[in-house]
Image (cartoon, rainbow, N blue to C red):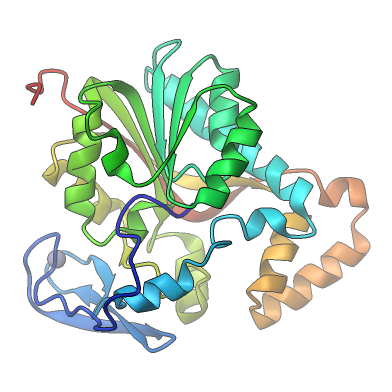
Length: 311
Ligand SMILES: [Zn+2]
């Protein structure tokens, strides 16, 4: 889900060339692919992939229209998608419990979208706060939560005063949209209490879908400014003061209906045809049932050091 930082105003039409890799400082890049006129390159020193030059504020503002966050939820397969999202949220919550998340934890999600993850978190007894840039998505999230928890409109700065407050921070499909991931993660670190947990979900260049689909990988989008791998994400987290706890291949609970709807919206020739065929022959009860599949992402669990000084 989009959110977090750097929601641009349409003020600047200038693309931003990064002279050095924000992760390692390296200054030589190798071309990888061009996504709708935006070059994606790989740092020769650390392997981080990034869009460089980065899209202008005006280009990003045009992409992040009012319905960007909610577009998926408003598709005809709405109910199926919501079911899949909530099942995926339960998987992330299981990982957090496994990593030692305390009962009744204070949980902050940056980029909470329509609030599906937060709803599942409240059902585990967590005290939830969502931050969401889009006012439309905020309204939807409040409706989803039915008055439980807090939903704040804005970016991570709206919780800047809540220092050392949260047991858990969750970033689902956010970090790849942020102009300055290191600054953003330092703000997350500040919001966490010492020993608190961070869960990050982001597309992974090491995923099977990236490897198999190559230039047609569905995660290649102009608004994705950084593409991490397990190695570069771990380095980024360590560099900003987190201790890595665990990396998991991103699994999502998806139904055949969900996947078919996705590829109808973002067609990839052979895959769309195969899915249409499958969808035609599989009984409806099966095609709506979420199944755990290894998806295009990586899930990282990290911890703020327990002995971290309170700022
Ligand atoms: Zn680098």
